[in-house]
Length: 314
Image (cartoon, rainbow, N blue to C red; front, side, top):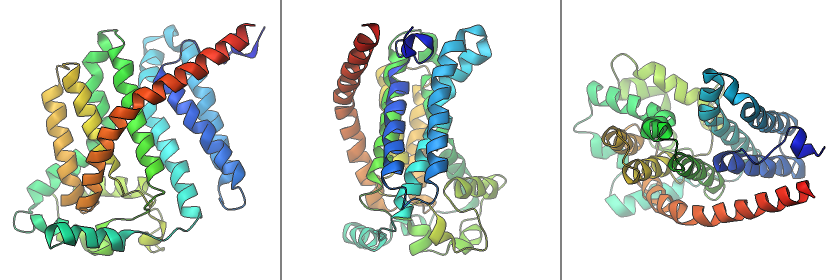
C-alpha cells in the first residue's frame, strides 16, 4: 500500500488546500535554507508540518459528523494566520530596511498631504467604531461572501475559496519587496491612537486584537520594532476585492452585504491609519493581477497533482 493510499491522499483535497500545502512546503524549505537567520525556524517548521498533517486528517474524517465537515470548510482561517506568521518571521529576521519613508513621499506626491488626514474633518467615535469593526471583519469576509455558495454544492465554492487564499498568500509574498509598518507608527503616534481616534464600545478591544495578531505583544518593547512588516501592498484591499468580485460573479445572496463590508474595509485601512494610500492603490492593482494569474497557478497545481497521483498508482 502506498503512502498516498494509507493516509496522505491528494484526490479529495480542494485546490485551496493544495495551495496551502504548496506554500507550507515553500516556507519549510525557506526556514531550512535560512535556519541560521530565522530564530524561530524550528518552531516554524513544526507548525507548518502540523498544519499540513491536519489538512489531510480533517479531509479523512470530515464526513463522520457535521461539525467535522464544518471545520473542514473554515480551517483556512487558521491556515492563513499560520502562513502569515511564518512569512513575517522570515521577513523580520532579515532586518531589511523599512520602505515607509518612500511610501510617505509617494502619498504626498499623490495628495499633497498624509492620506489619513483626509478624514480629519469628519472623524468621530461613530465612524471610528464602524470602521474598526469593519476592519476586523476582514478575516470573516470570505465566509460572509460564500456561505450560500457553499450550500449549492458546486465547484463555485472552491473557485472562490482558492482565489481568496491565493490573494492572501500573494500579498504575504509581496511584503518582502517593500517591508513597511504603516502610518500609525511613522506619521502618527501609536501611543495616542486611542485619544486621537476614540471609538465607542468595541474599538479599543478590537485594536488590541489587531495589534496582538500583528506582532505588538510586549508593552515593554517599542511596538515599531516588533510589529509585522505587512503594509505594502494592502492585503486587506486585495482579499476584499477578490471576495467581492466572486461574491458578485457567483450571485451570492449576501453579495450586497459583502460589497459594503469590503468597501468599508478598504476605507478603514486609511481612516484607521493602518495603511498609506499607495498601499491601497497597489492592493487594487495586485488584486487584479491575482485574479488573472490564479488560473495559471491552478493549472500548474493540477499538473503536479496528476503527476503525483500517476506516480503513486504505479
